[in-house]
Structures are given as structure tokens and as C-alpha cells.
Length: 588
Ligand code: UDP
Image (cartoon, rainbow, N blue to C red; front, side, top):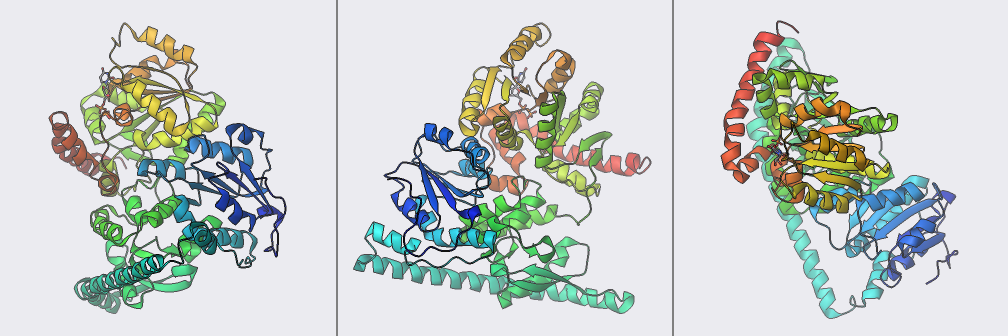
């Protein structure tokens, strides 16, 4: 199949900006996709091999859409997508793969895709996705072509005209209707319960307050409803986020909000960009994946990526689980206070930044060839720090200290200094590797039991297409054999060194030897290699979303972890409260 330069028949209006599309895949596997794109773009280029990818001329801003498929001979990874993005700078990217597990999904979506799914699921939405992205970009609706994605799929599969397939469609349609009716029934029941048990009593309290103080009961908010329709909703006029949302449940009766859906988009946030077009079609919900992740400070991927993740997973059962997850998340919700850039806790200054900011800080150090040390602190580290002055001074000397774990978010809430994000090594690694791969920097993995760092290195390399300059285990004599290890690290040419000896050993080692180490970025990463090598499983996402990762870690290694969490967590909270009452209040 030769790439066509002209599209036959009546063409929808096209502008220079959206005129071209590129497909990455094998000719025989992507014929139908090619045909579909031909009807929407002036030129469609097929790229079948890595060599052809290298040969593509960089046409910045001229490529409207790049579609990567799993029939392309190079394994789909965030690294590959970033390579394409760097080379072609397409306005939109789509990735089609039949085999996507959750980790892969997150990893791929970090490349900023507008669609990630199987070939089949793409065709179910293709018309809408392509039209929406083009319409939004150009402000001109595309003409509807007779040869739509649906009819093309029918024609290609040749199955839609049979009685069996019609029956299947009818059954599918009916079951979808029943599912929708059940969801509405649940929403109205929840709406009734909340109205009588929570909304009305709170209404009475606030009405009495109004009588005495004149403070209005409600505050009005302009937001976007389903299909981006502007609507006005009411919240209770109170700073306690947990109460202010009760009036939203009345919207379940009007059907303007769903119980579970995409995040409610405020009108002041603007209409969003083309990549949000599909997200806007989904009804916003009182409960959303974005709000849940944000309350536990693990919304690192950014709003759009999390909304996409929700949309791809959306099923009535998934919504039900999300609804249940909203209850623990309520505990962590905070008032909308402006976060301060430094979180001062137990005498230590912790950097209160987002993952994105953390990555850009590291990038800057790499560019400027200026060395920095990065340490993560969780409640266990801070407990150790209180008993170990040497560790305390090591942390104080670190260039950046990042807050790790739900315990720190709770401490932030107790001290009324909201934490912006929970930044831990395991969550940071994909961002760090993507950045390293883009900037052609390499990593050295030092620590853990023999073989663990090596296995982790293989998995990291495969997942992020990043160069691993070398690995070494952490069981050597740190006093007498460090020189040899340092020589190996320096000779490897690595720019980023990850040290996994556990806290405080790793921080002290970095602080002691940083003057001899050549890598620009030195990070203490604790049990990271154990997670990435598959030696120890990480808690499932839903547990992390409700702040219970520590429970999973106790289940994994009860002998070693029970003291750290069962005793350590209450001790930490006690120390935080004591510090708040006696130390901070005296030296604010
Ligand atoms: N470790 C090491 N050298 C040592 C002691 C420990 O490399 O002398 C490794 C250990 O194998 C494990 C990591 O350090 O992989 C510590 O993990 P842990 O979960 O204790 O770290 P945390 O995340 O709690 O700081």
C-alpha cells in the first residue's frame, strides 16, 4: 500500500495544521485504519520499521495525528512514544495495543496520549475521537463522511448483517439500558438518603447561622455539565469541604451530575484543550478518581491522564468501588488553603512540590551539571531522625527532601500546611526514567541483595527505554569497599545514581561520598529495586488510593514491618502533635 497524497471524493475541510497523519504498524494489520485516516487527512504516511521512523522528516506542527500500533516491530513503551513525539511533534497521539495491563497503561499514557486502547475499542469511538480533536483545534466541524468508522468496521468484519449479530446487538443494547436504569436507581436512593440524613440537618444549622450572622447558606458555582454544557450548582457556604458538598446530591435527582463520574470542571478553569474533548462528553460526578487520588496526594499523572484512566475503566462495578473509596478519601480532604513551598516538620524543611516540579528540578541539575542529593522521608524515617542526630543533620544537608507516604499528608493536615503531592521513589521512577530517556542520560542502580538491582535494571530498561549504565548490590563493606564501588559508578558514565540501602544508611552513604561521586543526581530510594524486580509486590492501586499501602507492606513482611507501622505510625502522629503544640507554637 502506497501512502496516498490525495483523498478521493468530497473531502472534509482541512487546514495545514491537521493535514497529515502517520501510522506506525504493519501494512497488512492496519489497512482499515489507513482507509479511515485517508478519509480525514490529506496525507497518510505508513511507517513499518524503525528505519523508516528514523527516516521520517521532522515536520513540526504539520502532523495532526500519529497512531502507534502493536504491529509496529518496536515494542510500545513510553520511551518509543516520546521518541516519536520528539521527532514529529504531532498534535495528537493515539496508541493501539491489544495487550495493556495497568502498569503499561500508566506508563504509556505518561506520553500524553489522547486515546489508548485496543484496535477494536478505538474503532468504536474513532469517528468521535477524530472529529472532536479536529473540531476543537480548527473550530470548524468536519463534514460527516458516508464511510464512517462504524460502517467501515461492519464492512471489514462482514458480520453485522447476520441475524446472530443483530440479536447480539439487541441483547447488548437491552443490557446497557438495564445497567443504566440500575445506576439511576442507586443514584436516586443515595440522593434521598443524603438529602434526609445530611443535607436537611445541615441546611437547618446554616439557616440558623444566617439568622444570627447574615452569612449566606449557599455559594453558587458555574461548572461544566455533561457535553461541556455550562450549569450552575450550589454548595454549602462553609470552609469544611466535607459538608460543603451535600447540596451536590440534589443534582442526582436532576441528572445534571452523576454519583461517580469525571471530576467537576469549574467554569473558571476554562474550556480545556482538544485532548479534553472526549473527557467532556462524560457526565461529571460527585465522586471522581481525580478527587480521590488528589486527596491522598497521588495524582501525579495530572488531571487529564487520570480522567482518561477513569473513562477507560468506567463500568458500573468500577464506579461502585470508586464510590466506596470516596469514604476513606473524605478523611484526607483538606480545605482549599494555598500550600506553602516548604513544609516545616519536626525541625526539618521538606520541599512541598509536585512530581512535575521535582522532575524539572532534576532536569535543571542535569543540564547545569550541578550535583544534588535527593532524600525521601516517610513517618518511619522521621521517627528514626528524632532518635538519631546524625541522620537529622544528614537530612538537613540534603539538597531536596521529598514527602513520602500518607502519614506525611495527615501531618500536613494536622499542621494546616497542605501537602501538594506525595512524592516517593517508586512513583517518581517512571517520570525520572522518561526524562532520562528524553535527555539521553543514564542511571546506575546501587543497592539491595545480589541480583535484585540487575533484575530491576532489566525491567526498568524494558519499560522506559532508558540506558542503565550499571548495577551493584548493596551488601559490601561500606567503610572499606566504597572506593571500588564509586570507581565503578564513575566509570559507568551514569548521570543519575539510585542508592537503595534503606534509610538512614543510604542517606548517610550519599552524604559521606557525594564529593567523590560523578553522577549529578544522587537519590536514596529504599526498597525501590525490590518492587521493580518483582521481589516484593507493591500494594494494589486501590489500597494506595485510600492511604493503606502500609497495611499491604505489613502483610508482605509482617516480621520486619509491624513495628515500623503499628507502633511507628501512632508514635509519629504523637510526635507531630507534640511538636505542633510545644515547639512550633513557640517558634512559629
Ligand atoms: N540493603 C542493602 N544493603 C544493606 C542493607 C539493606 O542494600 O546493607 C537493601 C535491602 O536489601 C533492601 C533495601 O536496602 O532492598 C532497604 O529496603 P527497605 O524496605 O528497608 O527500605 P525503606 O524503603 O524502608 O527505606
